[in-house]
Length: 453
Image 1 (spheres, rainbow, N blue to C red):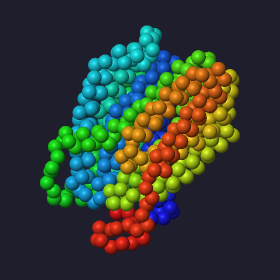
Image 2 (image 1 turned 90 degrees about the vertical axis):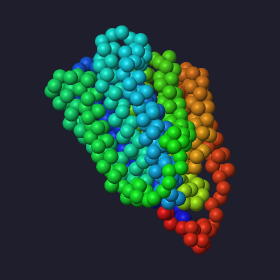
Image 3 (image 1 turned 60 degrees about the horizontal axis):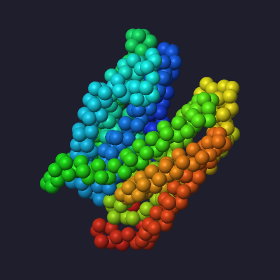
Image 4 (image 1 turned 180 degrees about the vertical axis):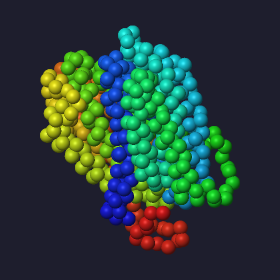
């Protein structure tokens, strides 16, 4: 299969994923815009609450990411029994994990609020508790939507998850002013709007599952059930856990880095926080390539074609191009980006310096994330998670040492750590076997190029 075909498939899979991920970031921004009218304490409460929700996303990625890989592999192998097993395993994991997080989080909402607010006992604490009282039970809907997204992506459909995310965001945009200000529900209104928007998207997601041709065909195919639900769940967990760990480690590292930046000064913390939100617009593109590479790799391996080198090469080129574009954009448009987020004065200057110093890190990060999709799709994500963990620890150590140089020193630490992570993943890539020139089809005929199943 030619490089052009791999590149075309990656682009077709990646761009809907990008807009889906971007919609998730936008939902938090929409809430913040309307909650800002309630005062600084409300903003602080919702900000820390949504940060916790982002961290909790890593829990359900065990099911969502695991199913994406397993469903794509079963689809490539044209094995309806394996596909049904993957879907059952994902939903079983959801049924096990969700009550623990939703019910446990609701019962512990006050200690959680104190934890994320750093023990503060000011006016933001009751507001955070009020938000959690709605948002944490609502995590049930959030997790279910993530599972549906994982199934659809594994089945080769990345556009429907994008549409579902846009639908949820549109409803949040309409409901926020009505519930927060119109019905005077405050931060509770923001949480209710988010849950209602996601619930509508979830209902449409279930309809999409019923209409998906690949899933309908697998459900209709006769087969004998050979594994229990627990066995299916274990397989999904074994596949998705390293990917979940990778996400959680990166999120935790980002939070820990804030404490190191705080040693430099308050201005730098504010600048770092704003600039990081701007950087998410770029990093979502990198992760969209990663998901596309994982889906493509899993599908081809399931079909009996090991083309990891070819897929990895195209993912690396695409990720590198996106990283370079992001670096050049932030280098030239840094001041305008900071102003767009409402910063000015010393904060805007510090943020501009940070964005302009991010270039090397962004290019390396893009390459690492994009190439990592190949290893996620081929079942080598445990090694990838170990590289990420070591890289994050090294980044924090270097940031501590170089923090005396200000935000450019932080960027240098991030780039140095990422360079070593890239070196490690490149070594893994070079060990991959070369794809055979001739593929053996199921019919037993040989052909130089075999198209996707």
